[in-house]
Length: 142
Image (cartoon, rainbow, N blue to C red; front, top):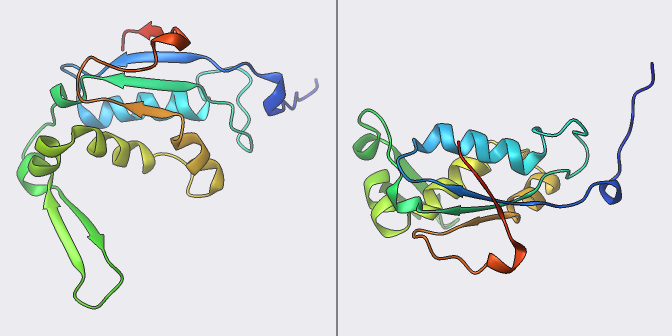
């Protein structure tokens, strides 16, 4: 039995359109991360970016369970003493729900150059309109 090793040039890129309407944030982010990393393909190779492009629409219409809207806090730091800023999930979802989804997916990808490269293939939009109709994304029901 031989183990096949695939290169990036051996795989063709696909575009997928996912609708986040009435989806739970974390469970939906898991499915998106699997597609971005290529784990849904039989040719999956951990050291290569085998994933596909993912276009997510209706990110504003996602929901979370429990008390996460009030209790989950997003932190960022300016790098200066006393420069920490915090924002609850409720504010993040009201301002830009796409940032909450991107943050969740980013945490599920590898923490290296490969993970950053995979994250560039994620396109998230708060409503139904997106500029990627020329790529003819394949719509998937999750």
